[in-house]
Image 1 (cartoon, rainbow, N blue to C red):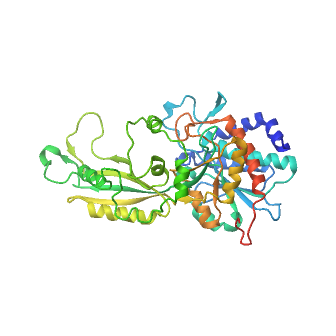
Image 2 (cartoon, one colour; image 1 turned 180 degrees about the horizontal axis):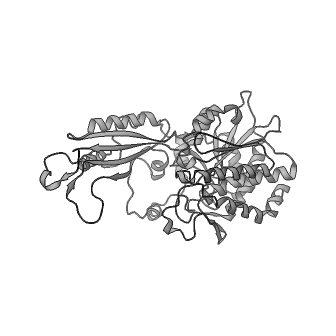
Image 3 (tube, helix red, strand yellow; image 1 turned 180 degrees about the vertical axis):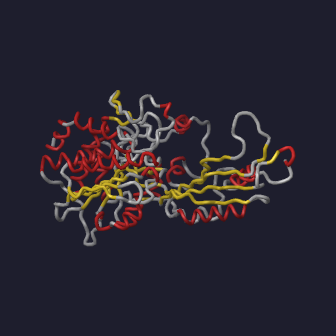
Length: 465
């Protein structure tokens, strides 16, 4: 066992206490009243990087929640690797469903329970601890290293694109390792090679200039709720295909290799339905469940409201009705053109007697895809095979991590998913937890992958060969 692995093992209790301390900071990025706590979490991360002997550590303003940077650049001729993660968390509601207060972490059954335990504080801390062990034991690292941790991932990283574009020299690297993500199962590794993008809109339907009596005026003019229902219904076929004209025009088809990779992943439809609590699956025809979840675009209604909401009945025709719509995007779709296609559809299908405003919601992300045989993925595959004694599945994620495409766009660097959370750990939900076995495995894995990446050959243009 390398000395750095012994170092990690000897400090197991210390590192757990540090994780608990980190988790006590309520760094909820979506709620303004927690802005100081998000900053405090960033300062905690910066202090931990300094303790680990990294240089140039700083907390940097973005115009929103801050980012944290640190570096160690003393291996000439070796690649420069950036490790990414985030220290902000989701809100904790519904608070009544938590067994313990969400920011008072507790260890039970070899799990640590707290908001942010799995997503992403536990995962991101593993990389700091692993590299600290290597530096303390050997005085050097196998690669040049940069850390980039953000405090706004849970709100879509709204300031990150501009920030990274303005700091290209500081952040320049050959490859990014993302500590935000996870594995397929506790005993089955996975390489997440794709993420869907995101765009969102709000529809505001207006009819009469005030609410009116449904007996006096009912049947004489357009009800905004009826109009909204008609408009939403016009966006899908009965089979589940999106009917917005042009919606699929730029969607990239799967290759035979990609289809085979997805088909190799075990799938049990009964288990899938049981997990959701549904009796039947539904979606765009002609595609498997995993294909629809990972590689096909969607248009979903996330919320709808209007009129009387309280108990009982109020015989009123409301003057307004509203809905929020989000689309998950795949290569080669982009948020702005999709938003315009939906706006055109809304204009074309608005029923008479109402007006509809379709307003983009700022949260958006480009889809992301890394070649499955990219050298960074090959290094991750070698580590997974060593740790799990199994080939990883090549999977995709239906959600979005905006920074992946941002890094590729501005730095020319691909991001390899390298995290160890699991799907059952209640990320974004009450009683979120992180397995201590994953916390320790992640530390070992990060040391191993940096050793693997030291062999990554760099072309004259600075990109992996």
